[in-house]
Image 1: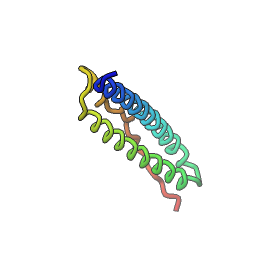
Image 2 (image 1 turned 180 degrees about the horizontal axis):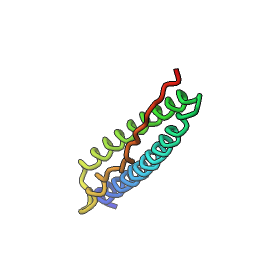
Image 3 (image 1 turned 180 degrees about the vertical axis):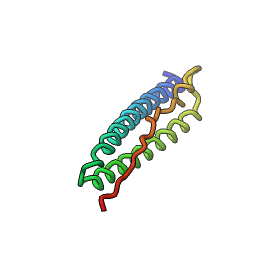
Image 4 (image 1 turned 120 degrees about the vertical axis):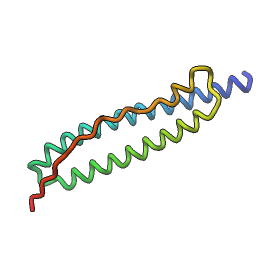
Length: 108
């Protein structure tokens, strides 16, 4: 196997790993969206709202950091030489669910 074939194989393997992470980020974003919907409903009558709200923001912060890391990796990978037509696949972005508006009611 020559060096270019070896490099191409390594690039494809790295791209597959990044794709797996991107899919995981997308799934986690959908999970965070569903969590936010449940949180919105539970905040109406739950004494646990502070804990739920904290957990939701912690998950959102981790997702943002993971998504940023994926973008950095994808950008770095895009700077390498790809087989024709491969680089557009590498720069695919993960879809974000629409934000949910929540009204917080103080029980004080």
